[in-house]
Length: 415
Image (cartoon, rainbow, N blue to C red; front, side, top):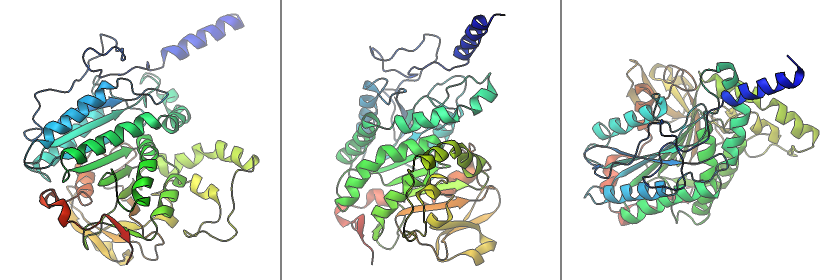
């Protein structure tokens, strides 16, 4: 085979291994989204009753961060309106998937099925009788066909760049519309947003500007009640700046202080604990050669002397930023004040969440690791052990019935 023919063959093969770039769940009649006819799609059920059964909507973004189908956002907000018509304020739960996933329904998407399972669990356990709306944020996290498993691993670098690029004005606007619509329709409603893997990076970036405005205004404006980054692939430099902003403030009703942000990663997550620092090695070297890193004259308030340290770790795995510990009930000797638990999980063990002794991070941005017995690896977040643990941080159902004017401020100076 001649060299030009070989190059052409390799180019054809490379094109064939890619997952095509399109939206998977367009709104009927859309002229923006183009989905092949053979791809099964999911549409918002106009007759779905959020109180009787959780209702799910999709919002998808393309490679450049534009909305694939803007009417998807309109359908999601109409769903929030229907949920808010009930006497009991709703729960609005937003999920941003991570690497090697998208919003395609078939073959069976583990993230979509897992998220639907969590919504069902909330409806039958934590929030019985409460209208529940789920919003699945989709993007092209799965860029390489499953028939090319080795190539899929090397898509890390390409997908990290996408996860940094996509959360721009379009995504921030969509999330803000969800928060504003929910507050307008039902002031007592609760908004929870969760991002996994690169989805954690995207969610954090998309919310940072809006939440910065919320913090600077002293708790005035649209916001979520809880933002969770699970096994997030974001560098700790993403969370560090928000912690700087939050330092000296409290969040939570009364004495029951809980996080505004929660970054939690498994000790069994080799992807963010070990592989991510390796993946950042080449770009870190480039920043070093360019003289980009700043070295602090003295350790900063988190005890760190170089910006490079933040870039080479994730927030939850960086000891200097960790605020809490998740430990077995029999291992409380490592603990400071216990703030959650004990809770018995389906794995037969009991756990507590406690303040990390000697912690520097006392902000409403909680960062912690969890045992691999709860989440065994990077992707296995949709399991009963983790969901039960996560429920410890969710707003209690009683708050849905507490008049807004009787609540204490969400943000206030630390006592």
